[in-house]
Length: 139
Image (tube, rainbow, N blue to C red; front, side, top):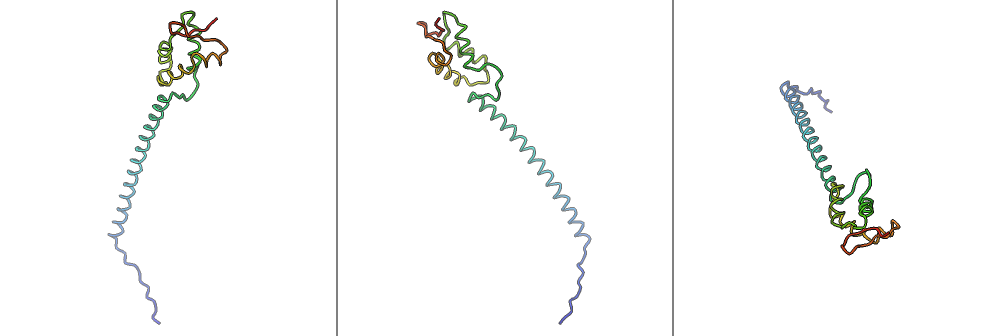
């Protein structure tokens, strides 16, 4: 049998220095890539938040309850209108003014569903449509 010969690896200082420099460059490149990716993620998060806000506006959904809602406001407007009543168009105009973050189309649909029968049933009052087309509470 032949004896194994201990072979020491050849050390080339230039190769080691080149390897160290290459590793430093890779670390710098990785740091830049991470920084770029983090910035892109932050930009996408901001776009997502803006899109969610727009969706809430379009669907008419609110994140939190802040005061009287659309249906309550419709009832108040009809109640306060007196004998002359109030038209659906006037109600919609006031709702758009009071709830700028809500979709106008959604509020119009709510008015049409609520007046006169559903709100009359749920609130225990009689809401009538007058000859003028306005809505008022019958006394």
